[in-house]
Every structure is written in structure tokens, then in C-alpha cells.
Length: 506
Ligand code: BG6
Image (tube, rainbow, N blue to C red; front, side, top):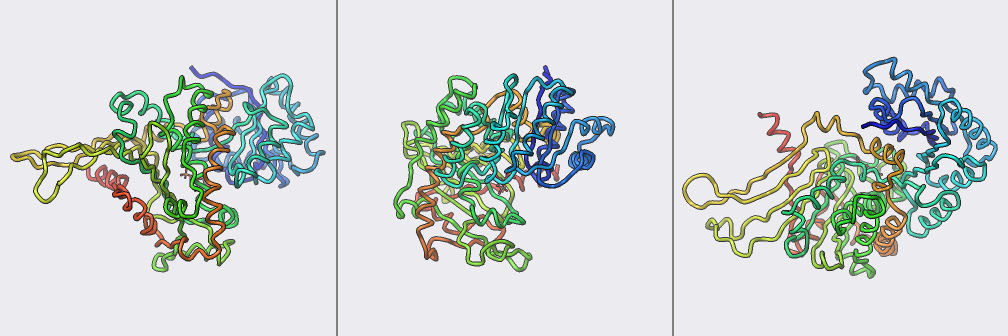
């Protein structure tokens, strides 16, 4: 059953790209499905001087691909109001308060407020402070703060930001977005783990050989050079998205799916990751690289990108081996890699099981040992699972064949499945913190990442530790070597491609 929600959304950064690409379309989807209907309003605020009319046009433009009924879309946009705002100026919060109160009365919003900070992180602290100081936080309804990444750039700055936010909001009012937690297949990790005996019983170091997590992108840093050069792939992708995925794969079964229960298991999981402290440990287990461009394909090298320091040592690719020091996982490497300008835009997780103790089906010269079973969780663009198994080739003899079983959601199911931001906005409306990052998770993730950063940042001459990779490749050879030293290799199925071709041929 669909319950209509009641809230005033105040979006800081309303003229920005995130609001346009994600927030307005997600609100519209919630509106079309009836999760918000009559009792909601949105205040957009940013520095630019826009009128309500202009704001509504922008909103209509952002949802143009989703409109089925023009009148409905116009009624939706009529709930949007704009107010120009200088986040440092108390006077503006007074105006914001007046508008908030009038909208509260007009739409019967019961004092429920969601403040969405979709702007530069340097302003997060001051906005939270002023919201409290100028009494925009209501006494009668709920008050929730949604905050975009990056949450700090190391533990210290994250802790300082958290301390500021906590002066105005309690932990249970703060919703730290990690949009990967809103993805269908990331949410499905727990479902597949905990509701299938064949996986639940094998989910440990006795049966799993290694785990591989890939988040590859084909785009370069595009117009985000200034942000990116100051952060790099380790902060941009590993500290949040990848470590959240690791936590979901590693955690013990939670008591229930309630936010508190899941979070406490995730926190324990993150605490069990081994911290690499010495340069030797870091260099042995983590490698970094930059894309070198490809003139033939008109691809620029990272250092030639706009707003990037031509001598930059910021990494656009990271591969690493994460070790989990607990009873269940001791000895199982979790290999991770992510990068810009790689060969494909894909996110997938391979769970590679151990070999059977003896292969009684060897094919002379080919299969000395049976291929391992691999469970793949396809996060995007394909969504679904596949399982690699060994079976006998049809016909006489005992020759083996490696087969794949799959369950990939079809395009229609994928298209109808809620988008990550839509899910997360609805979770926030419902006050459900499960798919947001708790402060303790963020803090622990920074502890892990900071140790690596410290070693990298101390390497003034990084000729030997910052590698180059060809654009549109799967990273530098050092990333392969990371697995080879343990007797493994990246399992390259090229699944999306072969699946697409198969579909086209059918
Ligand atoms: C963001 C990063 O958090 O995630 C971006 O800041 C990256 O650099 C993006 O491109 C990737 O998200 P997705 O959903 O496209 O895989």
C-alpha cells in the first residue's frame, strides 16, 4: 500500500547539476507513484536570482523524459518555490523561515522538514548551524538533514564536520548519502547472502578463495577537474562506495533488517579490515595510476585535463587488496579496483569459490584443475546474478564445459525499478536510515583510507608508485600483478558485452 508522505524539502544547491539530474526527477517519480501528492512543497535555494516561474521551468525541463501527462507535471512543478540565498548571511535564513512557515500552512506539512545539502561541502557546517540558530528546525514535526558526499577529506576533517552538524542535528536526523546504497543490486547483496542456504553456508574462508569488486568508468574527469584533482579515486570511490560494498559482503547476519541492526554489523565489518600502516604494506597491497590518454581516440591524458595540475600526482585508478581480520574471513583477499577512462562502464562483484579438492574430470593438457565456481553480482548496467559452474560437455567422453547460469533483469524491469536517489529520498521520508552511512561507518572508512593516503602523500617522488594506464584499458599491469602474486587473476567475463550480443542475436 502506498502511503502519502508530508514534508517540506529545502534544497540547498537547487541550481546545480545534481538537483537537475537526480533530485527533481526522483521527486517526480515519487509524485507519480503517489508517495508525495498534495502535502509536499519544495524550496529551492542557491545564490542565483531566480523567480518561482523560472525555477518551475527548470524543474519541468529536468523531468521532461518522464512526463506522460503535461497537466500532472505542471501541478507537480507548482509545489516548487525559489529563494535566492547566501548561506553565510543570517538575514536570508529569516526569509527562508518565513517562506517555510507559509508553505507549511498552505500545504499542511505538519512541521516536517527535510533539508537537502546538494552543494559544496565547505558550506555544510555553516548551513546546519544557521538552520538551528534561525529556528528553521521545527518543534512539532520531523527534521532531517540529507548530506551529499564528500563527507570530509580525511578522518580529521570528517570529524570536525560531524561535530558541527551534531550541534544542530542528532545522529538519527542525519542521512549521509552514498548513492550506491540505493542501487537495486547493492541492496540485493544481503538478500542473496542471507536467504540462500547454498551461499549462506559457503560464505566464509573455508569455501571462498577471493572476492573481486570492480567499479570501472569510461569517462574521464570531464568538467570536475578541480574537485577531482584535490581528491582522487581513493577518496572519490573507495572510501565510500567500495568500502560500503565490502561491508555488506563481509558483515555477519544482522538480527533484523532494521537500520540499527544492519548498521551495527556493518560497523563491525569495517572495523575488521586490516589497516596498512608502513610504506611496504601499502605499496604491496594498493596501487595507484593515472590515465595516459590515447591520441588516436582523441582522449586526453589526465594531466592535460582542464583544471588539473599538469604535474598532478592524483590517482584516477586504484586497485587494492583488502584483508579482513576476523574469524569468518581470515586469509580471503578482497580485491578492489576502480578508475576513470577505463574500458567499460560497469560495476560487478565476483565471489570466487575454491577449487574442488581433486578434479576427476581432467581433459588432457587443458583442465588440470576444474575451473572455480564464481557467483557474480552484476550491479550495473546489467542488474542480476550469474553463476559459473562446470558440467560435462554433451556427448561421449568426459570433457568438461564451463557454463554460466544467469538471472539478469530485463530492460522493462530495470526501467521500472526505482532509481537510487528515488529510493533514498523515500527512505528518508520514512525515517529509515538503513541505506545511509552512519557516522561510525564513515569514521572507520576514513581510518582505512587515511593510512594509505598518508604513505602516498609522503612519497614526493612517485615515479615508482604512480603508474600510467592506457585510456580505455582495464588499468595498468601492476593491477594484474597484485593478484598474480597471490596466484589469482582478475576474472574478466566481459559479461555485459557478451550478454548484449547474445540478446541481439536471439
Ligand atoms: C560518484 C563519484 O560518487 O560516483 C563520481 O563522485 C563517479 O566520480 C560516480 O563518476 C559513479 O557513480 P555511478 O552510479 O555512475 O557508478
